[in-house]
Image (cartoon, rainbow, N blue to C red; front, top):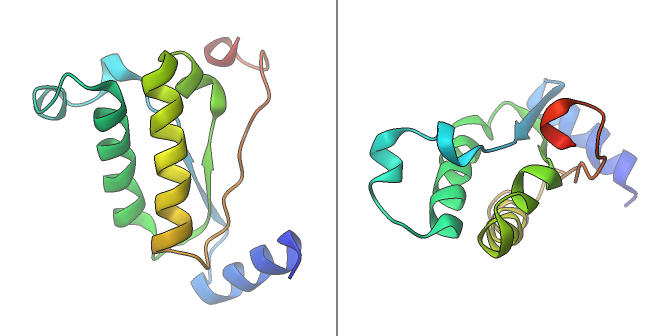
Length: 109
């Protein structure tokens, strides 16, 4: 099945065109979450997992933005990998759009 076919099928299943952006900024995570662990990968993944689990019913797709993860170094890269793997394993019918463009807005420069 092509990506477009998968996305179209998901639009129909969810009756929604919602694309959930997963663009975490470490400093903006809730303090209660930041206090749970000093591990960047754990924090970012836990934040993403909560968003994914809360929105999967309505999501036509999930879209992590690579620049937000790259900004956090190895921990960010690990969180991105874990996030994509989690979506594929837990919600395999929901497509993942990896947003890898840079410099289109200030936060991705």
